[in-house]
Image (tube, rainbow, N blue to C red; front, side, top):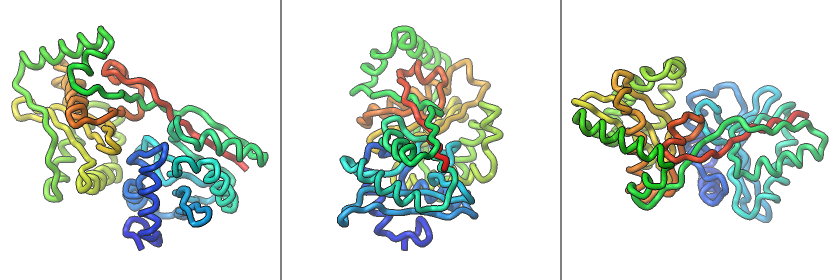
Amino acid sequence: MSDLFEGVSHKIIDDWNQILSNSVVNTIFITPEWQSIWYKRFVSDKQLKIHTIKENNQILGIIPTLLDSNEITFIGDPDLYDYMDFPVALGHEEKFYQLAWKYLTSLDWNVMSLNSIPESSPTMKILPKLASGMGYEVDLFESEKTPLSNLSTDWETYIANLPKKYRHELRRKIRRLDSNVEYIQYEAVITDDNVEQIMDDFFLLMSSSMEDKETFLISKNKSFFIDIAKQLTKKDQFKLFFMEIDKKKVAACICFDYDNKYLLYNSGYNPEFSSLSVSLINKAFSIKDAIEKDKSEFNFLKGVERYKYHLGASDYSVFDLKISR
């Protein structure tokens, strides 16, 4: 059995990873590693329903769900996940959903709540038709946007491609920082010995910069962040960028390095240094790091904060699907 989910075999986990890497919605949030970390930290009283969909011994996809009383959901929480979905092999979507729907309707639920489905996912194109065809009530709606930017081949080209106003603003802010203080931006080196201290530094900046983030940083969520840092660092998928002025940490952001893309998961800064735009510049330099490492995309994830568009992002939507029997 796998050590990720109790009672789930290594074979299913291997199949899950293989299918996901060859699917429309390949993202770190749908990996079994990510979902198992969340499950172990937050779930105690829901039934785990992980099921493999096959046809003629060929694996078409995976159903990763939780059953709680009369509701079935993905394994996850939209407050901590930016995307959720079924991993489905490319080219086999129609057959997968037909068989998946047959399995799902065999379970005991009144409401199916599938949140944070990416706009490119076949789930929201096929599943509502199957459900409405059986007379079920279907509600599909846009719940969030996750702005993202396709990256240029070099930093100067990236800046040159920004809208004129924002291009000049970014260059001006970087010059102002250069001329006023001595600063460095770097990626933290995380080990098992220092991960909690480094994450505490991040939590301090995160809680200092926004009131709702301080409320968000309850003990369980902090522990989840630390679990993620530990596990994803082992796979070189966790990047924590700090900016320091006079050896004092003034800004930080977490990026995931997955599928040749950077995903900006969360950030924080010291408001005392907001006049120097340290948070914006730290994120911009993280984009620069992604470009220098030949990444294809920088995903700002959920939220429509203005700075994301100032840094060249375009909208990409996520949807919630609710099916009622």
